[in-house]
Length: 399
Image (tube, rainbow, N blue to C red; front, side, top):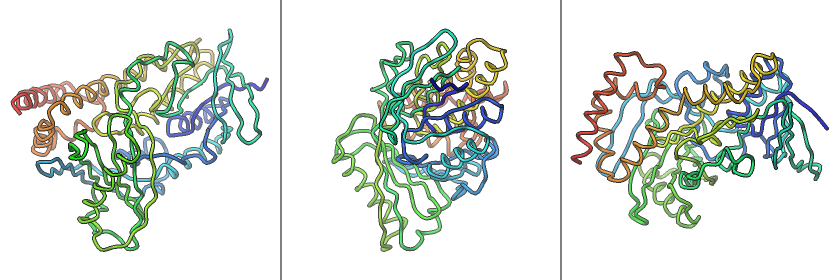
């Protein structure tokens, strides 16, 4: 049977960063990617945090636009505040670039490979997968495994310890149009990230919609937290597209590419590490429920998994899943759980969205702090955040 030190399932930001950093550390690494091309079939507005490329050693050439402003629209009004300088790209370029860097570092990335199952042995893990190109099933043994297959992951059968009974309740049905205008949209469109929070007049459901600018197109999409029939979702997106068209590229002919899949927006998975197997990225449920952001979290889990795999290779840890799970939960679980509870609180009474956005617009320091991880805050910043949170809670309860 073929063997390797570190096996990764999925080559998105989590799997790709894990592969590159593990290979750079001298760990023999194999990646199994189900798609024929890395980065294909991803519904994602692909907004990156300020400093993302520098943090993960990626070329700035992948960046399409650098919007300094976020615009949030509700049924009541529009709000706008700065976000530093964010970036937009496409998942093809992001994932593809990371994969190319991983290959250059020595990782073996194999496309057209579908993960099927795993079983543990005393000193490792055996993974079975389907090789689409060869039309066969194969097995490979690894010292440790990193599962990063995205939101479609069904991990209950892989290991009961990864079961998450609320997983289906957290799934969001998404559809996105890549709109290619024959001539540029108005200048404003390329300097802003738009988010829209509203209750659909067609279905009565809460909707999160977006418009993110790219080099040659606009990503215009929406998500609804439920499994929605395709016709209903398309009707919702067509109505939203019409409002964006009137504002940003009225009278300009355009073509469309349609994308659709499931995203996750619930609580993080309770267990993400057990007996040499680690779970990362969206498969771990590491998505901000209020915005849908998950690329930063995914890439960070890849980095943490690579460090744990390298520590295992060096004999510093027996089970790399233990330090991985501890570090990932310390980095993200507190913030993501709070964001999930906040989103549920807001959706129960949509007027509360306006209370929050009014406060963010009026207090730029508050808005800026919320874009950072909780581990970055000083004691004074924590005091300020608690004061702002108390102010919001009192106002929101009266809304």
